[in-house]
Image (cartoon, rainbow, N blue to C red; front, side, top):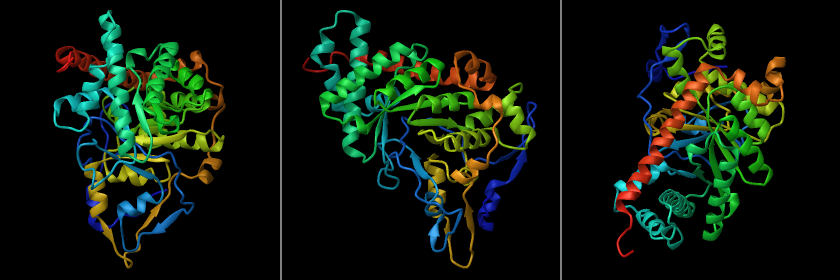
Length: 396
């Protein structure tokens, strides 16, 4: 399905073929390169209430129109644009801690200093154990402050160095949850952000069985999305733009090449397939599309549970006003009805285990997952190095 755009906006989405690699599919020109923010926000866990297949925008903005189909989430930091695009929820992460430490006047600075002055951590003789304690305390202290500022849930990043250690992930989440309990933050307000390795997905399965909500990230293949849904993950996050970037410069991934042969964007195709799988077979997971690069990406994703959008795109949507006589119709691409009609192969419907999961990952997912983990690990190390320089804080 497609979206009919005002003529004044259509030039923004000029179609150009993708030439490099073995993949050739239409790519819309992006308004800006994707920039990693200090942390990403994501919404309260509620589905779109719209059951209509389209709406007439009338006297409204494009942002109003697309928000009736999907929860549109600002990809922003808590420090800026709060009034213009207030986050409904937030993420406590290593990158956020780095941002806090670079802004000494921020309201979150005391949360970090309190963590570095914690007597339990201070008393640890092993430097590695002490630093891990500081990092846990800082994440939770900041997460606790965030929970007072946003109405939705707070997600807390789980150390990516544990990505291939199921038991380590579970222990880390239990440790973080205990600290949140001490602050009086209800578990219903929390999610724990875990990389979508097989071990991370297995950890999610155990944690969800305990009533602890998980947010699986770095999903770049259907095997990851389907296994995460089978594990009962609360949120599954797919990065569509990063898959598109990989396809622009690489070849040899069967899943991506199949999408290309159909003339589809591989990132959008993965979100569509994952959404249809979740809804057709009754899994509880909510699907989040991230790394969108332009408004057309959003128009193509209408109906997905959540869309994380950069502020520049949100501003453009907010400034685009449609009048009653224009009658531009925004079409819902993803719906339970379309999911019910989607046909899956026998290979898609397996009960995923570690062997079938690994075999189906493909080079794009393997490389992008590794790159994401490396970035998270480097951020955590930078935080620990910074903490080592500023510890002990004043008056300790």
